[in-house]
Length: 269
Image (cartoon, rainbow, N blue to C red; front, side, top):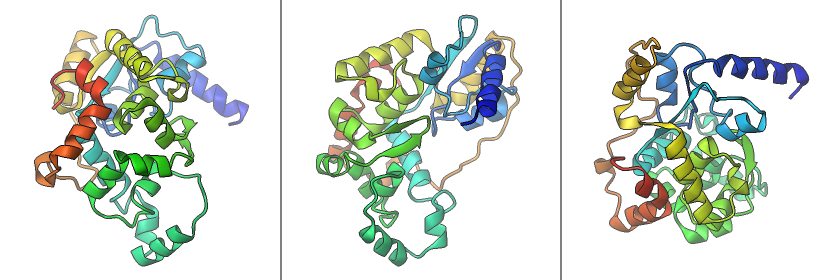
């Protein structure tokens, strides 16, 4: 990034920290909807997370910090539907046949790319449950621990290796990536993950995706910030959780891997 771009980002965030609150945007939790409802500058781009701001010495002493949580299972359904199954997002699906993609995937020897590529076997896996199983399968994680995701939101990460090392789910990884004081790659133990999540609960205003309109309205009212109602839009062709018939064993894996989220935040579903 050149010096001019860095200067523009600095001025942009400097302007925003004079706001009464700032929402850090973890993708697939309602941040885009919040962006439509709030005045300019109240929702940070998702690649400008809390650690990024601390690292660049932005002072939030007069600004309330806001995080949005979501039931992890609901999050995974939304994420996979959008990341792996939506041709508008996965342009290589829209532009190539699945047979062609399968051949390309089998020939690939490149360990750099987006995690959705490997989760969906080069976008050839079209079943949501199978893709979700990959995220919680020990063998899959071990086989993909050398895959580097460049600039996933803000930083380069060996995501699957981190999930293994910290014994956490991708939702917990993504939550920490957005709101933690540290880069997730700097967190050494599961206990340290828990400590960071407790810090977030104690230092951020916590909103819940399932009540996002009501809670945004209350946040704006309490801080004398205008709220503009915007109809919600489904950006992915997802169904309700119950319609996917996710088996009990997989649900138990999710509840274990994202255990700190379920333990520290109540009434998620």
